[in-house]
Length: 411
Ligand SMILES: Nc1nc2c(c(=O)[nH]1)N[C@H]1C(S)=C(S)[C@@H](COP(=O)(O)OP(=O)(O)OC[C@H]3O[C@@H](n4cnc5c(N)ncnc54)[C@H](O)[C@@H]3O)O[C@H]1N2
Ligand code: MOO
Image (cartoon, rainbow, N blue to C red):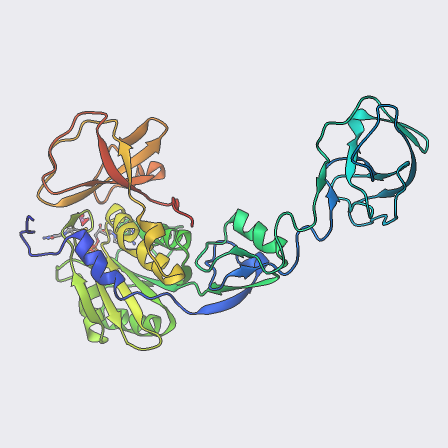
């Protein structure tokens, strides 16, 4: 394996060290309607049979005999609709009007669908013979009370929420979402997006990193802006460390006399996990842990250059949040293989992640890969991995990529 000239560890090694410090948070109960996107801490067990009784699968007429003669005639004795059943005993010449989902009358065995029925007042005769299909959904044909509808660890996506609701689960046990505080450092950063002064920079990085955090299941408690003063940064850090599961510091990550993030963190008693990673962009990324026992807090320091901050957040922060929110980082580490539309030169001495757009015909590299570039970010869908000194390749070659926002692997 090639060694980084600065002695920094690889992405995989740094990520593994970081993730070994992350544990799934405890559980909490939530109303089902508020649990969208959350991970189940306990199985969802059906509290009822579904359906509770046999129901009609079609609009038509329920009759009690499976055998139907071509000249059969019936007297319609009532109507059963979903929510208002008509629960009579039927004689062989009686029929009950039913619509889809209505409880079948007792003893009714089949439904003669509207398409073959001719109704005249209370009398019913047939246009032609029915098929062998009964058009009846038997009681509990979907699931029985006690059936497991979703297992612990499942993400409550739209389909999973529907299953949980069908099982009559008004409240569910879900894993607590990690509370994320974002601290942004830099004297040059404008306090808000309106009225940015001539020597100021828009704080775009925190907006993107906050959104990415939410995408992966974090709750962003606060975005705190702080100047380049160690003591101020330490004060922000101290309160963030006590109120959050994850603290993100953007900027001030490299080593100049104006970069204070790591110095400030060291001064408030965090234990470094790594300081810099052999990747591009994102080399100055650092990580640390604060406290132990019940409520440790993890700190991730991102570079200030916006594309570098976003890429490093996707590579490190998303898996951290995913692991804290569901017990495994797998959902955030779904590497896929994609066809790259452009030819690529030989890889450099550092493992590189290239921004790309993902379309139906493969991946297109963004025109600028500069770590400060933001003009093309609206079309950023994926990060392509270029290993150290990867051989140059022609257009149409395949390479591993990670999607930036979408979860590919909902379990
Ligand atoms: N001599 C060296 N210089 C640099 C090195 C190095 O190894 N040796 N590393 C470079 C790399 S790589 C990166 S990435 C940058 C990032 O360093 P910092 O984390 O210390 O970033 P800052 O100095 O705070 O800011 C860099 C740049 O980004 C702008 N910025 C900062 N915060 C935000 C924000 N929230 N939103 C938008 N833009 C932001 C800031 O104004 C600067 O322009 O260091 C290289 N230098
Ligand atoms: O990590 Mo820096 O991201 O290359 O500009």
